[in-house]
Image (tube, helix red, strand yellow):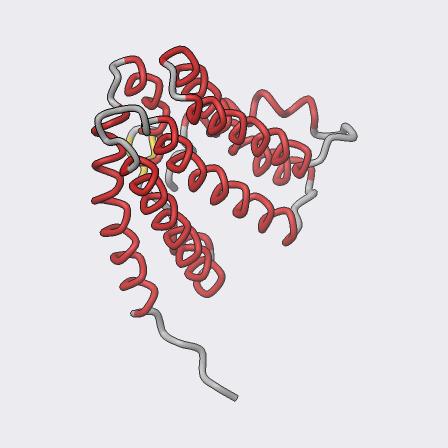
Length: 201
């Protein structure tokens, strides 16, 4: 059995006291969404202090993403709507993250290109989320499961985002995202197209 990631284990222990409370998973998803939106707004300001605050808020939002699922499993309050709400929140935050970064970098050497690059990255991320969701709907959650090594998922690299902002690395980050996100989106679309299509009645 694949070991549960460390952040998910921490989330589990933190939300255990909420198991029989009035708090439901959708409340935690909303807190995660609001925190993520505040992060993107801070990144859009563009100044060094606000960028670092935004990076910290994004890391918090990314961690909170584990809490709703853990509470749903603990309390038996899982729902299809809640799952879709969680997926939509993930997509919104990651899309706006790049748009916010691009807007905040418009005063950098990238100029107005920064916003366009952020939009390209964000739209690519939106496509990735959409096609991965479609794959999950057809084949189950295991079909989109990320590799896990020593308790860390690939996506845990997002916790290093504050290091990027502290080292003033947003310009190379958005350049790499503008190149890499569309390529990854094409790869996910190719995977999606290879799935067996349901027979028409």
